Figure 1 (cartoon, rainbow, N blue to C red):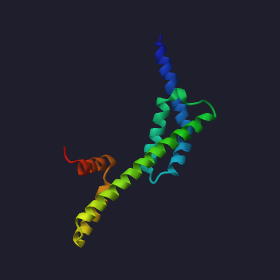
Figure 2 (cartoon, rainbow, N blue to C red; figure 1 turned 90 degrees about the horizontal axis):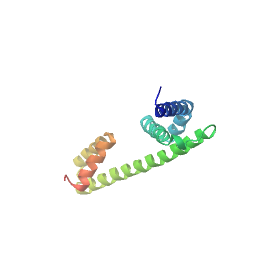
Figure 3 (cartoon, rainbow, N blue to C red; figure 1 turned 45 degrees about the vertical axis):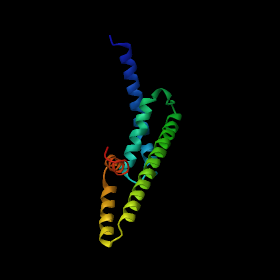
Amino acid sequence: MRHPHAEDADDRRRRFEAVYAANFGPILGYVLRRTENADDAADVVAETFLTAWRRLDDVPHGDRTRLWLYGAARRVLANHHRGERRRSELSGRLQGELAGAHRDSDFADRQGRVGAAFRSLPEADRELLALVAWEGPG
């Protein structure tokens, strides 16, 4: 005989899988139309369904399920866009500080390459470098 909580866990997993299967495509389409690239969209969709898993008891049944997921995706997107704006402002401030410190043309060329390299780094690396630049090494 199975433990009663095991049945609850199985039911919960099956419900989530059904919600995911029925709604992944539409939620992905919604997010893709509102993000700049597929990587950002994948992050937002993953966070949206993680929220659904964590709050599965709050996810309504039937026709209202997708509406709930759209609302969750909208909130995740808003957080994502706020983070993007902060990163963009940080990059602009760092470029401005560097430009103010050095004005020669050779430095301007190097600065452009450094800025491009900085923007190409993963978000966690950019955040770490920005913190060190602003707050100091320790």
